[in-house]
Amino acid sequence: MKFNYKKMCMYAYIMFVMVCNFAVQVMAKEGGGDPLVAIDNLSTFIFSVIRAIGIVILGLGVVQFGMALKSHDPSQRANGLLGIAGGLMITFAKNIIDLIIG
Image 1 (tube, one colour):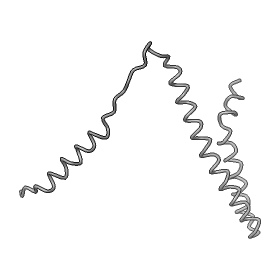
Image 2 (cartoon, rainbow, N blue to C red; image 1 turned 30 degrees about the horizontal axis):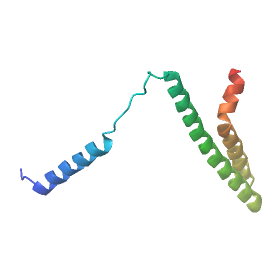
Image 3 (cartoon, rainbow, N blue to C red; image 1 turned 90 degrees about the horizontal axis):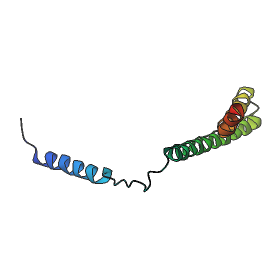
Image 4 (tube, helix red, strand yellow; image 1 turned 180 degrees about the vertical axis):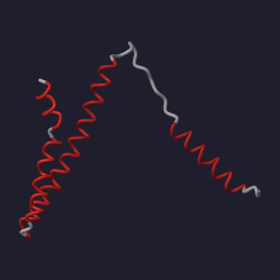
C-alpha cells in the first residue's frame, strides 16, 4: 500500500476547514427564557417557508393556465387550475389550520 502524502494533507485540510466552520458558539439567554417562545418562532419560520413555496406553486399554476389558454389545450388548462388551487391551499395553510382548530 503506497502512502500518498498529498492526499493525506488534503484530507487533513478538509477536516480542519470543517471543524472551523461548524464550531459555533451558543450563548444561553439570561433568565432561562421560555422554550415555548422558541417553538413559536420555529413554527412561524416554517409556515413562512411553506407560504413562499405556495406562492411559487401558485405562480407556476397561473403561468401554466395562461399558456393553456393560448394553446387551447384542455388537459393543460385543468393542470393549471389544479396548480392554482394547490398553490392557494399551500399559501393559506396556516389560516386554514387556524380556522379548523378554532
